[in-house]
Length: 437
Figure 1 (cartoon, rainbow, N blue to C red):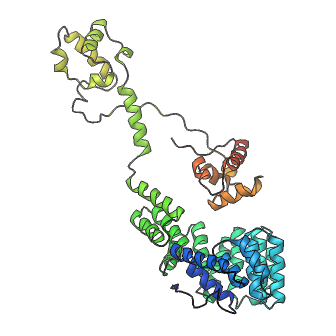
Figure 2 (cartoon, rainbow, N blue to C red):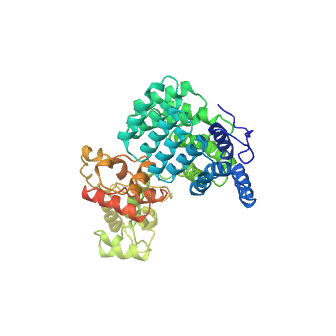
Figure 3 (spheres, rainbow, N blue to C red):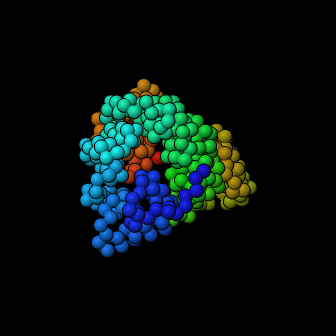
């Protein structure tokens, strides 16, 4: 796997540089929080010094995710294929799809290669969810499929979006054969293998990415998820720790670390806890609920025996030792307990006693599987709500009802409005989100 080293090209000082140079800088800068902060400081120094290197500053701003600011500087740069390709990338990130397409056209006129331009346009249409035009643009550069890893990677992203996972896997594998250095190809291959249920193969891909120096952050976190699902908490923690070593303020890693630690220490068993609750309710049943003579009831009251649990913790000898408590009362209590398969003294040692539990409620009628299998695309909802669900891997109604409100509200930019939308969709189907007991 690739080791990321400090790039030889200085975006702020070089007269010319290529997209590969920009990519190398981006990989180094984003490989650690420390590098990113230092790079951001360099940008501020360039801005404060009034630098006219508009292309270098624009590319640098794009690397740290300041796309709107990057566009301002790229617009001022001289015409070149690098300018327009970077500009198209930033405009796509900002959701200005038509302008991004125009920028790719200008990149082509400025000398950018045909696969680069057409695959770039295909990516814009894919993000826009205009899959018809995506397929058309990919068709336009099909003649390069024997030599272009970019074509197969872009095709894989398109097939992944339309849920053709077998086709996507084949495309990613071809892209990897043509260019084994592209970590994004291997990451998306792993991701689709995981979606399809081939966890072992997905784990192998993530391990390859995790062997890099530094390791690919998203690969480490996804690998941690697979380890946690397999119950291998120590390896999951190790993956997250490696992320936090280079990105100590990575919020997803911080939260996931807490989740894994909770999973390690959590001894709660839902069924056992339910049984305990039911047993406790039986033990707390007041003596007044049982049919006993006045003499027996009064004696028990004077002995401060008020519940069934109190009664089971006392022995026959202790009862008979009490003034005015005779064999008749003892036999009466024995008989009452025997009808419930209980006996005096069975709780005297303080151990958890075994009691018959109340009958469980009848299970609810099962939901029609066809309803649960219905895809999200059949229902009207906002782009924000749909994107939020997709980011959580939710693709069907069945996926939604397996989530809780807290899980949905934990999605970035997924607020009360989006939650209300989802509830309305489920309500129309007679369903609801999962609730924790």
